[in-house]
Amino acid sequence: MDKSWTKITNKINPKFMKGAIAFAEMAKGYVDSEGRTHCPCKSFLNVRKHAPDVVCNHIIHHGFQQSYKICTFHGESRQQNEINNEHDESDNESDDGVDALLGDAFHVGAETEGVDDNDEAESYNRSSNPNVDKLFAHREKPLFPGCDTFSLLRFILRLMHVKVTCKMTNVSMDMILKLLSEAFKNTIIPKSHYEAKKYLRTLGLGYESIHACKNDCALFWKENLELQSCPVCGASRWVDHKMRQKKIPTKVLRYFSITSRLKRLYASRYTTKDMQWHAHNMSKEDGVLRYPADGKAWKHFDTIYPDFAKEPRNVRLGLASDGFNPFGTMSTSYSMWPVVLTLYNMPPWKSMIDASFMMALLIPGKDSPGKDIDVYLRPLVD
Image 1 (cartoon, helix red, strand yellow):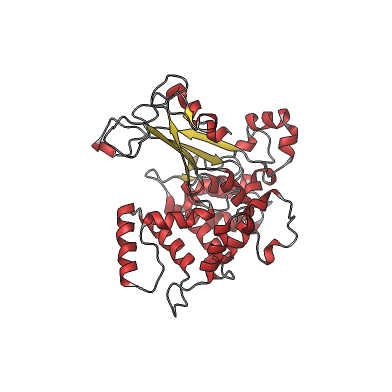
Image 2 (tube, one colour):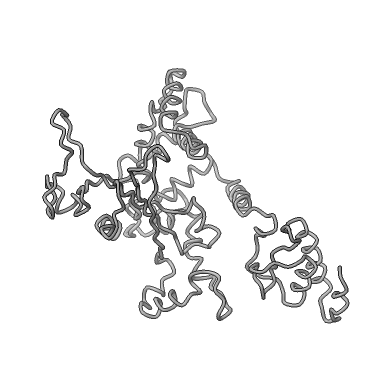
């Protein structure tokens, strides 16, 4: 340490000093090319960088940033920390959390005691969807006679998780499922990726296909559902191929319903607390912006709609959209526009990871929808 340490007064708590020195020693392993590291003191909040000795001095004089519990700037992985915490919480859960998942989603089991039968979440009850009984039956049914490791439901969930994690194609999944069904004759494994997705749609993992005008004028939805041509420009709803027996729509909007997903976030014991984080973890320091809830826009909205602001479970969303070419460099004549929602209710280290982003719409078309994007946003707004 340099000579600046001699200026520290005797009022400093020795235990606090030891912690600051230990942190500075640890931070030396995470410096940039100029030998500086992020300073987590209350004055700089990891925005400025200094030498480890200066960082230690700042922590002693100004105090440590209280909200900096996971040291992502100094080597600690937030994702790994969350994974470890989730594993610790689920040690006492059975069946890889499948029992807890179904119990929370459909209000069955001991955890549902005290739930009002007239509550809005009644739509998650088993009686509201006959396919739910099938899920519960397959939760107990072994994958094959004598198998005590996997049930059919757990196997499909694990297999789909592997597909997403490893970024496997639908074709590869079809080949794997076909091979497994041929190899194990006594199982009831889905024979294709489509069958597996259809099976899991009971959990709300599906989407709605909505036909659209090729000129982005209107959707063939609700009052326009039975129309064969656009009510605005008169363009045909279908691709003009006389040789085809089956009609093909010119454009198809994919809408991923957010209502069921938002209900599921509040139904799960693991995410219901996170959905109220913004109301119970507001910054206590005026003029410090650490989260959208600290901003003037958020507070201005609360003053305009005080009844909305009083309920911490009310959902606050951020919306973003941008075009991309799903075919990479193979084709430059096609553009797909996803509409993604961000949950501002949740803490930033959870709301800003890809697993928390909510895909709401997939807008197709060769060109950008431009100002006509409001036509495609209608299902989401509704």
